[in-house]
Each structure stands twice: as structure tokens, then as C-alpha cells.
Length: 218
Length: 218
Image 1 (cartoon, rainbow over the protein chains, first blue to last red):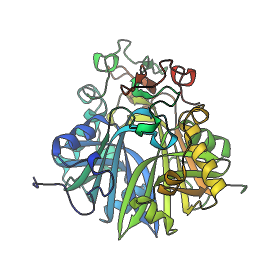
Image 2: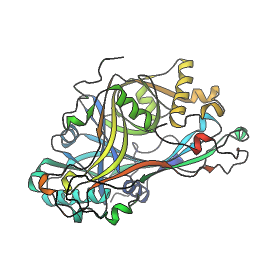
Image 3: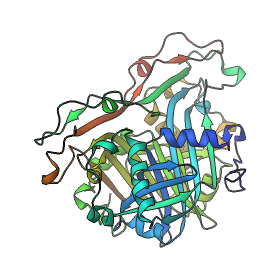
Image 4: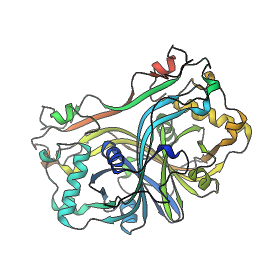
């Protein structure tokens, strides 16, 4: 494990008090979020693609169809940025200028490597599944050879990363504190609704506990 | 307004039934989401930065500190990708392979232009504010000259864009339908919690209706 994730490219130049470079903060954000946004360039054009992921120690795993543009691009070892964002609330200040959002985000810079070892590939798919719905993997029909061949997994080492965190109330200028408007934070969170059973025949009627009690962080 | 947003770069190569290229779908997703992820390259390294935005007709606006890396990079007119993702649910199939998520996403390709006209800049800040918290702008202390100078706004024309939408139940293979596990969709949505008043003195006690009744889409 590298001693620090801080590099010239991940050091925050502005609002450095929002920067976090410790493993614990970075891991916690990565473990709570569901979707990451993967950035890479093809023919001079950047693309940003949302996708699921999982983490094992200092490795991120993403997967996709072996035929996808993202997978084909990243398998060539081009530079990649993986960003994860949790939106925690809207920050309503007295001044338009000091409006903000409370959020926690992680930015990972690196290169993706294709996972070719069969055992690591299997394990990485389990990790992605357990990241999204812990408890699910043990109950489902496991991937077969054809499905494994159609799926590519990419590994991104967590070597260069940073987190940004904004929390707490608005920070208005002193002279605006008496401005006649409500000020504060409207918290936001991702909440599950009622599970919707598949109308196709054959599914078990009982909703599993890991679905009924689903929450983030897992 | 261009007749189509479909180009070789935004046409879906895989799962083309998930692709949408009509304005209505694209606008609706852009209007519902709060945060976009902006992708651009600096010195051969892609960066993906989460930020707020607003839409007016076929223009997206994003803003940031005039000193930020993102703003400085994009002001030079480099190619950009803006991606917006709404996560609507977890799709739990019988087979690991057919697990998925229900989502709606938009990908915009283009270049950002700095908004230099004072009137358009003011209006774009209002549009971003109203996108995030409709009703707020009219009540807050408006930006002053110093704040306007410290804020840069970038405009991205909606000329090349596509949406991807996955909805509905899992799509298992016929032979898996009797696998003994619950299958279906766990809906997810972003919900507001109880407003938290700013502990700093002077704020009005009454929570405005646009905060109490906050919901997406606005």
C-alpha cells in the first residue's frame, strides 16, 4: 500500500480544506456509492460512462460487455479517471454566491488492466455483485462459461486518488446573516422503494431480507 | 435546433434498444438530475468532475471558480463530455449475469465556451440556481460585482447527445425462470430529509414551501 495518495494531480488547488487523502475516507465513499463515472479519451474526444463497480482492498473493479466501447478503449491501457459522487444535501445560503451542495466524492486516476486470470475474474464479479446487493451472489445462478466469455472485467489500482468532502451549514458573509430568508441544509439521500416482483413466472414470493432491509452504506 | 442528435459517436453500438435520441427524453433527464459529471483531458490525463448545472433550451450551463482546473481547461475550448445519470433501481435477476440497474443517462459531447456577456452570465447563474432549487433565486441576496468576477460560467451547446434508458423487470433466460430466488426490481430514489436550519443567527425560522415540498423532477 502506498503511503500517500497525494500527488500533484490529485492535490486540491482550491478550497484545500475540502480535500481528504486518507485511505479510510476514500474507501468509505467508494464502498457507499453504487455508480461510478469512468472518463477516458477516444480519438481526441473524452467520454464519461456511468457503470457499477466494486472494491477489494486497493483495487477497483468495473465490468462490461467485451464488445463495449469503454471496455475496448480501456483494455488498451489508456489513462482513466474514475469518479464517485455522493450528494448529501443542498446548501441554501442567504447569498446566491454561497449556495452549495454537501457531497462526498472520490477521484481515482490510473490505468485499467484487463483481468485475465479466471479465478480473479470470478472473484471480481462476486465483489461487484456484493458491492451492489450484499447477500445476493450466494442465491443466484452463477455465471456459465459463455457468460464469463462475454463479460470483461477491468482492474484499476488505487494508487493516485483524492476525496473531496463538503459538509455542514452554509457559510455566508457576516453582512448577509440578517438577510430575510430561510437558510440551512436540505439533506438528500438515496432511499429504496417497495420491491417490485418480476411478473415472469416462477420467482419466489418471499422478498429476501437483504432486499427488504436494503440501505447504503451496506 | 438540429433535427437529430444522433451521430456516429453517440449512436449506441450495443443494446441499441436502450438508446434514445429525441429531445424530449434528453431534456427530461437533464432537467431531473442535479449533478453532472464533466470529463475533459489535461496533459494526457482524463479528469471527471461532478458539478451542478442548468439547462436553457439547447444550452447547458456549468459554473465554477474562475481559478479552478476544470474552468481553466474548458475555457480553452477543449473537447468535453457531460454525463448525467439517474439511478432508478436495482434489477435482481435469477442469474448473476442478467443483474442490472434501471437508469436514465444522458451523454453530451461538445466544447465549452466561456459566457462573457454580462446579461447572459447573470441569466445563466439564475438558471443553474433555479435548476437546483426552483423558487430560491428571487429570495436571496443577488451576486455582486466581486462575486460575479470570481465565478466563471461555461456554455455547452446541445448539438451531439444521446440518452440511455433501462427500465422494467429483469430479463432472465427462459431456463432460469424457475431458479429458487426472488427476482424483481428494488426502486431507488433521491428523497429529501428534514431541513436543517443554519445555526448562525438571523435566518428566518419559516421553511419556504419550495424547501418543504422539494422534489425531483422540479
